[in-house]
Length: 484
Ligand code: HEM
Image 1 (cartoon, rainbow, N blue to C red):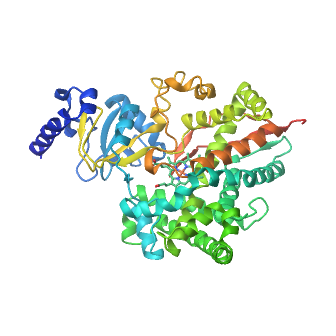
Image 2: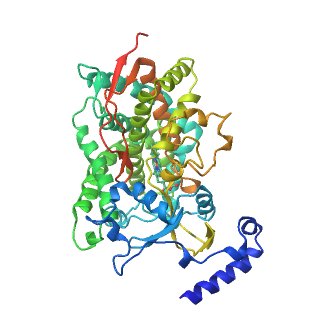
């Protein structure tokens, strides 16, 4: 095996001699083999999973901290065997190399249980668990979310949702004007905001008690995805708790989406132009002839599920950081009062740098690549642990301080472009990025214009890894009404 690796390394060196990019980055003599990548002691069958067992030093829930701790011993690049061999890096240049070697149809690690269930139940798999041509087909269903006219269309609709949310927020504050556990309330906002895009209807999340079913489905989806991914694949033998959560969440959202899509399709058949004007995303979806009817329902479910969790977390953390840093809050407020959103945008970027929702950016290499000085063979799964990179002093001065100014145009030129990638990168980056940014800006602006924000107690909120990284404790904020 080792001989084969050395032959591969030799062949790569010959190829690389013809390749000026590799010549620039590494002295070829110094390229090391994959087997030389640092690692911890592992055991047959279990590999490194013992580290995360009940009595082990780490918890999957605190995966970011585990990787940070291991990197202190092994350095910024190392490998772990967690069922499959995973190359981990916390270095921004390596992240860049990773994305340079992702190909035109980037491969993310699959979600086998999700893929299996969807194929069996709906004969349609969707954009998240798929790879290759199958992924590409579904991706055509979500890319309209990134187009300017589509994004712009929803600004007014989101403004209305944000104003309604403010009344709801007030109704939830206690006698001291404190709203407890904002994250849960914000999920109602993000459900309402994404539902005006897809399926293109208001769900009345701030009034309707039936919405609990949807909230529960959103939570079950994330939990089911995480449990089936991290646990042993016994869902193949019988329906585990995690697998059942995937099933129940899909059943709820499928029923709701199917009804909405069916009604809208009738309107589309009757007057497509009207749907185009009023529901540009749904119009694009209905007009997509690569996707079957079942595929279109699946895409709608994915936009819906994708639109809840990360956006709510990011708004909650931005409110938390603004409450903690009064001068920044004041600056953001005075900017939005003057109709400028540049500083608030910078606040969101800073939140996503300090508290990103994705644990890592992962890809399977489509070709051999030199990462961190090692020749990594194609098909290797590489995870760039962005939350560690984006909190690293070598990329961001005073990395543990909330400093939105670092993102202002005049300052952020010296920032490494791959050091903070909260929405991923390349052809597979988050298709909901622009919609999410607008949803966040609009709500935060409304809140800043109407309320002063304060933390009722001095707490430090961290993150735990479920499927996404989420707050590790309730975020409670005191909202004092401003005299306008
Ligand atoms: C602050 C909010 C959000 C954050 C931080 C976020 C982050 C991410 C990240 C890191 C990825 C993986 C990208 C990659 O592998 O390069 C992703 C994928 C995805 N996101 Fe988001 N997201 C957010 C909001 C949304 C919203 C609002 C939607 C729906 C409109 C959405 C739908 C999706 C979908 C469907 C994918 C899978 C894309 C694919 O595999 O091709 N996300 N998101």
